[in-house]
Length: 203
Image (cartoon, helix red, strand yellow):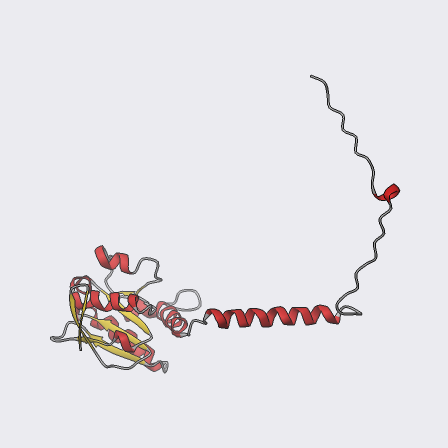
């Protein structure tokens, strides 16, 4: 199936997966590293090299897109089409920069602005200990979080209502009667009201 996406003639693939790792030739090594790590941790992941002739991208059939960003990726029209399609469909994007001392510019820089991205160049860099984890673990965790469904407005309101109801029940247990009785109040003009005198200095 072909679709025109901002003048990009993109062929849509049929790979059904939760996570889609997409790359071009100069990012294949890092993409394969990410793919194998996700597979070994029982994640439902697909892999597509968009450099191939008549390459198809299954961005419509995934939940999260993990693009492996390189200079060639930035120059490949179908890659731009894939990311624009992901944004149009409001699919989470978890980018990986695979080239050392390189940063995306032009359309790609704008596309990932605001995204948390990860710099992974090789296996040593991916698994080098950083405090109590590593870059690959951080990438995997962020991708798993992105896979979680976003609750609807109605679902969020339901959770908030339940929390408020529990708070009310907690307050009820601390009171002798519900609703609490209003405290009687009598108004004594002589004791409750006093005149206020204000003295202003003359100019």
